[in-house]
Amino acid sequence: MTFMTRLKTSASDLARTAVGVAFGVALTAALVGSLPTPALAQAPAAAASAPAPRADGPGPALWVIRDADSTLYLFGTVHVLRPTTAWGSDRVDAAFASASQLILEVSNPDDQAAAMPLIQQYGISPATPLSSLLTADEMAALDVAARSMGMTAAQLDPFRPWLAALTLSVAPLTKAGYDPQSGVDLLLKARAEAAGMPVSGFETIDEQLRILAGFPEAGQLEFLRSTLEDFEDASVELDKLVSAWSEGDVATVESVGVEPMRDESELMYQSILVNRNVNWAGQIEDLLAGSGTVFIAVGAAHLAGDDSVQAQLAHRGITVERVPN
Image (cartoon, rainbow, N blue to C red; front, side, top):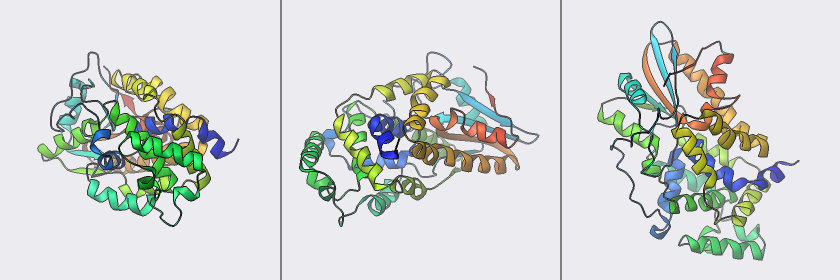
């Protein structure tokens, strides 16, 4: 089965779950910020400095790595959430309070000013507009989808297919009440800054965008076509994933957010998850060679499955333990 055939099957579902637990929040925030006001969620976003609503049970999973002089916590995040999602817990709060450093996927997840020029660099191609790649019927469908979020096909025409598809995937999430401003990453960053805690990142926004821009054009086009076919579908898969994450159900996070990506596209799976997990495991190994307590927060999909960050660390002889509820 070819890459583009695999990708077509459930591309928009994959995109919406990946936006939640794998793609960086800076990209999502920049895309949301570029949407016209009517396309945004009706519910007001929670202030980044506000405490997370308390989970009814133990809350999301937390892991820890220890040696003689280091304690490293691993916490899976969801980059976009509804403001009312309950995920706060005493266990996570205590781990965070004990840390002297916060590490996210990128150090500046709220920096739309940094993200937008990069999106233009990697996602805009006036020399090859979408109208030169899509049929007349497909352009008509693009215009219908664009108008539903306050735009037109003409405004999306200079976009590369991956950017048009991702923009169309994000819009229904905002209508369903999801907002990066209510996501875990920005809340943790705000807490860290309020406490004077240094914040750093495993990678840059540029590195994240180059992953998406590097997919073959044929696959990008199938991604866009699939997104157009079910543009109005509710964000059911992301709802399932968020519910599982908030309850510490890592097996369901894997089955909803990780396994479908591997089933549909090995290239996407390796590029978005595995390669980055390997890179981050190397950086975590370096941290462990130092000393102190660090709180590490990355998309929840990176902490689930056979190729997770924990699995990559195990390959290096590093033991990761789940913190008891």
